[in-house]
Picture 1 (cartoon, helix red, strand yellow):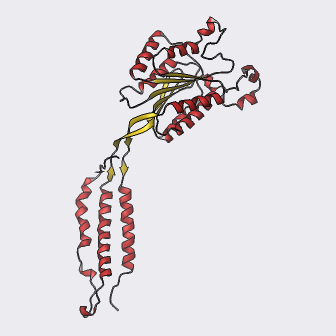
Picture 2 (tube, rainbow, N blue to C red):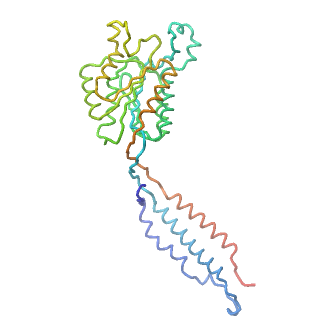
Picture 3 (cartoon, rainbow, N blue to C red):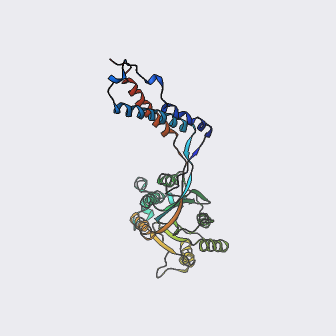
Length: 341
């Protein structure tokens, strides 16, 4: 639990706090004259109610004073332990991700002249964002960050557990059209940078969702190897396989030219990094859904993290308490006996 740490925005108002003792003092106006006090029967209930109303009046004055003084709890870090991972979602926003994800075994040529039918199909990027939204909603203990990339990386959101921020960031990833160029190396570096200067608290993962590979220069490969190993980051690549593409894994009979395809070259590089690495080929909507479900099932280790609780203002509650007290005092005043019959 977070330690109770209270503060005041306008502490000068606290100088008026002793005025809350005034209702506890007896006043002549509270007495009712009678000819002979011996004829007045004892009434302990009225005496108790009288003192209760005095205490309520004192509480009203104190609540108003605390509200004016700006009573609040400052933001405070809280250590929490959950079950999940620190995951950076690295989503490809190149132009090819705006193309429809065709059914398994179909050929792009069959849809090229059938605009209406092709338009009804969900694009690769939209489907990836939808499934990532479901993925994050089903893992409330994860710390998630989001980076988009095409020609340049775009850090969208730093680590958080707040689902409204996560869902909003994923949705924002679909704004506008993608660019034709893709620099996956810079995207991976931007994702790995989220873990720099961050204490190791549990499983770390970059979840790369892309429909293509990239030729990485030797210098970029060296930088990626260094930063991924230094920060102990695992890498999952969900490769959205386009219709007619050969995929990232070599098959019997593939030519040497096919072996050097960017996605296969990138896959072999990832395999040789010496870090936890898994690759999934999603060639249809169901395969993409199974790949994300597999990631959700595997990454469920204990994780320790620090959450910053925001400032909480108690002034409104103080005024609410004062308002309720004033209503009670007003009701008691209406029922008060002004003179004996």
